[in-house]
Length: 81
Image (cartoon, rainbow, N blue to C red; front, side, top):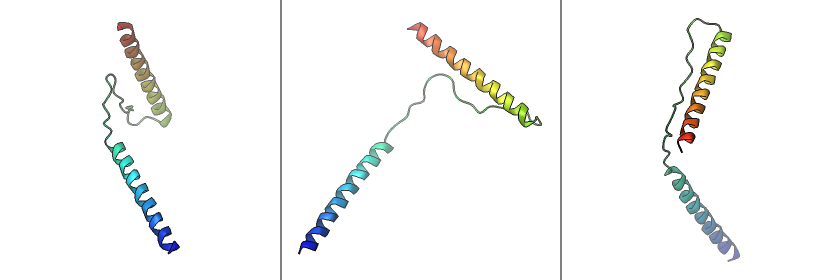
C-alpha cells in the first residue's frame, strides 16, 4: 500500500514538473525580437589572391571603420535629445 502511494506521488510530481517545463518553454519561444535601427553588421570583404596576413589586416580595418561609424551614429542620436 505504501509503495502504491509512493508511485502515485512520484507520478504527480513528474506531471507537475512536465507541465511547468512545457509552460516555460512555450513562453520563451513566443519572444519576438525587433531589429534595431542603425548600422547593420556585414561580413568583412577581402580581396581574392591576397595573403592571410593581408586579409587579416583588411578585416581589422573594416571592423575598425564599422565600429567608428556605429559610434558616430550613437553620438548623433544622443546630441539630438
